Length: 257
Image (cartoon, rainbow, N blue to C red; front, side, top):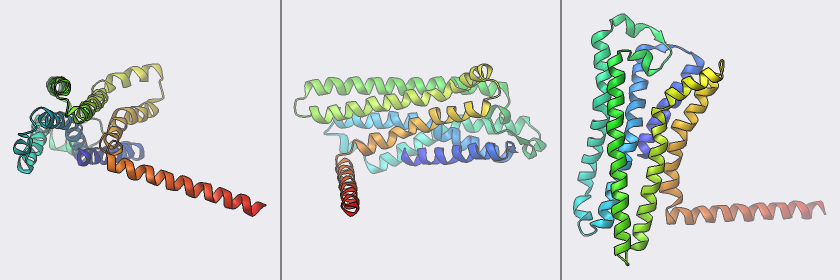
């Protein structure tokens, strides 16, 4: 998921900067940027669901965890995630290739998805797949959370591990809820543009920070700060920095005396 988020942020930041510098870019390049951004954006909630299932297996089926969650099967799951995230949206490109003339791909447009994939049927298709994907992910998170919660109550020896897994899934749910903002952001952008005319660039910038940057900020918190070893060295770093700062202030004070 970290690699996926890194790709997503790199592509969206590049596209965002290009839209500020050039305003309009070639349709072919725009197609590439949009498709990669869409693939990686759709990938995030499915990744969250797969990791929640892994935590469910580790807590509720601990004896079978090493047999089910092998390295080979993990690679297979990653490939399956990419397939189910790429397949629905790559058809947008095929439909556009079939309906638009070749000259369209040599034009320059402001790089928005609706400016490139203009067939109205595609909008309904995207809405249907969005509902299906996020409904499945939401139900998966609820199911795994409830099963882990019941397992934590039943097992006295694994309560600490179950509690950590439950907290992780709760954070996944919060991250999923923030990712779902991307599906209401176009409507919110239109409303805000009507309220604040002439502020479209500021609105898009704020929308990008809240919808795309902020949800991915949770990943290092979930898998970094909550890790015991990482947290231990992080505390040591801050303590040593504080000590060096105190010593530097004391030396400056003594020097002034």
